[in-house]
Image (cartoon, rainbow, N blue to C red; front, top):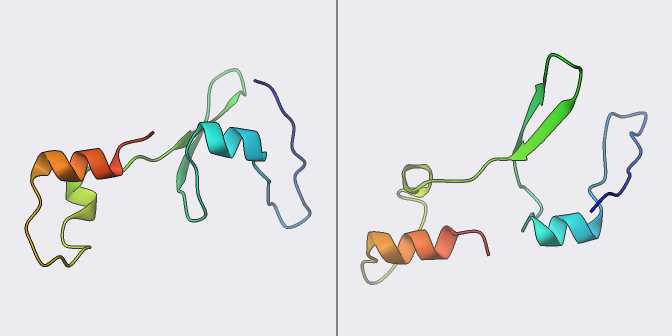
Length: 75
């Protein structure tokens, strides 16, 4: 899938809705940027691991590690 965006004067890009949906991106998603030796820009969404979310949620019952992995997995 190839789509295009335009860089604004403020340095912002809009990710097309189809791509956001396919990549399961939401407001607040974080990314890493890299420029390879040929000048290509690589943009990758950062995916959270269990240690990144430890202590973020307060529940009235404990969850297993499997339950947490399933809840944060990319659909």
